[in-house]
Image (cartoon, rainbow, N blue to C red; front, side):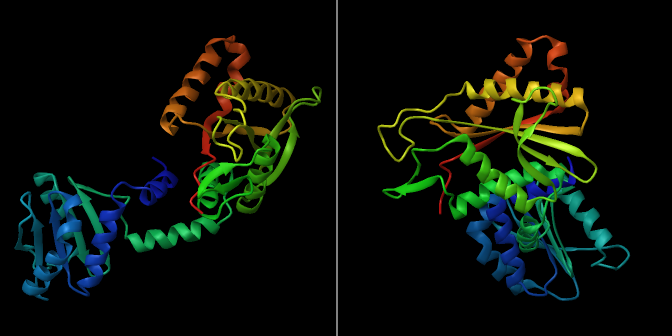
Length: 338
């Protein structure tokens, strides 16, 4: 897993609520050093205050204790002894916490001086590196201008920005998000384009002509870095009836737009490889949607349609898209809380 993926996993994690509580326990315990073992981390929310009180009651500044919230949610403690006498040596605490958590299949939180980390079943949990630090890093990261290798993070930031700030093509009707009736791919493309222009280090442009000989072949968005590496984005959308401001407005397009997008990306990749003006790195299909199917269902549908597309064409014809196609981005247009 890449460092970038590790970073994202640290922000979007199923145990984020529990991690926040662990950080709160640390703050409430002040400068106290301790290890905290949890057989079921989800129970920490019910016993946090009891744990803080217990630690405060038995804590001694000259020793390190392991506090345990056991399988029955009872709290106990024992002294952690280092044969060398250096009880707060970080290397010793790392090894000891890994040994105990592996033996017991548990989580162990280590809080000692400036060291604050979590171990699970013998492995340090990389996604836990201090929740407050991660939150600050996320805010800083969102303001950074991203490069071509981090476009998927830029897409996530775009969706997050819309979710919390709203967007020009969604209006609230009876406090529910609805899509404006005159939506178009051009409006969606331009909105995404403006965000990428602000939030990446790349030269971003629209209607990039992918061929010197085929004037009609223009990809929606192109992005080029200083090394002439190119990423292309084909923008599509489909919206079912009931998602518009006007309830009687019929559906616009359908799931077949995935197929249309793959067809176009295939042509673009072939033409770009022929002309060799830039070195194509990535090809994305960016699909805006408003549909009753879940995101996971649409993801499976898009993968099936992509594979069917490849099977329905000669290998030579699809060689370039196989090389450059990265993924399909699914953007739920109604995922707005602003």
